Image (cartoon, rainbow, N blue to C red; front, top):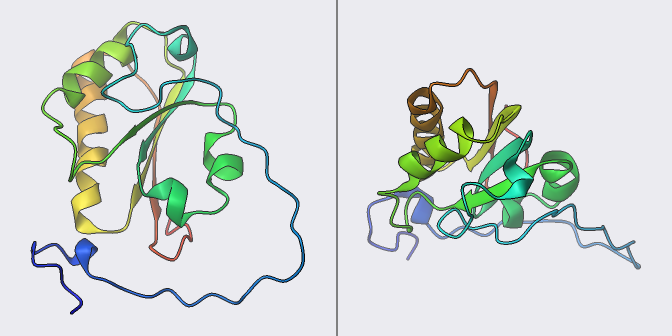
Length: 150
């Protein structure tokens, strides 16, 4: 019973084999610099977006990529979203408002390798275009095993 019936290959159940870790590991500090983080909840004019590097991140990235805070989030304002499960109808407009009213330095979008996640990258690109701003964009894809694909 691999497929959950919704037709998306990203919904297929899969076991990811990992070697067991031994001993105690040092607790990694959080790099989160603001609250809230969900795109529906972040205020477009929040002070943490002003002159910021912004990470727009698919929800699953933080769970798949153990080093997400250190590698992707450090020094950035965050907005998380799920292009498959969220009501995304207002996302392009909201991000365009964030990008146009906050002197954003850069945007990084981090998505999972599953097909349904590509929608978030498309929405961010549309929002930058709609904002009329020239903002550098980096797109990062994370494999379901947690490794960076590009």
